[in-house]
Image 1 (cartoon, rainbow, N blue to C red):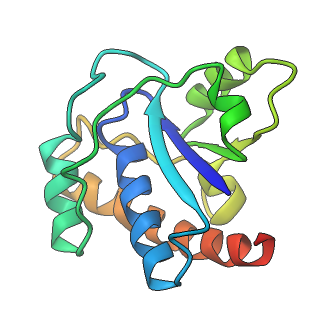
Image 2 (image 1 turned 120 degrees about the vertical axis):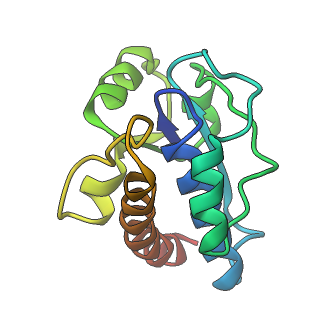
Length: 154
């Protein structure tokens, strides 16, 4: 099973989701069965590590994002991944425009599918520390539900 998280630049929300889900999959004993990655719809940060504020907030909760590097989503990802989860409606629209007719990936909003309380993970880039903590709160709750679904699929 392969899961791809997508946000705009792949330096805040999607790498945080990647790191959180990887950690939760290890805890659940599923890290060998599920591959997780993240990408951005834009190319501005390709090759860069996650935002230092994302890394700091994640590290305080026991998640290490330091090895990740930003990449841009491609049409090939729709064949390579089983589940592509966008962080917001704008990125979901961009993904739908890029999605080839032959792509096998299920495409949805991460929070709409797994949290239900709100549809979008807010972009903390222009926010203070509280924004990054709030993003982690949302992603942790949704990731717990995603792990439950993945267990049922394997």
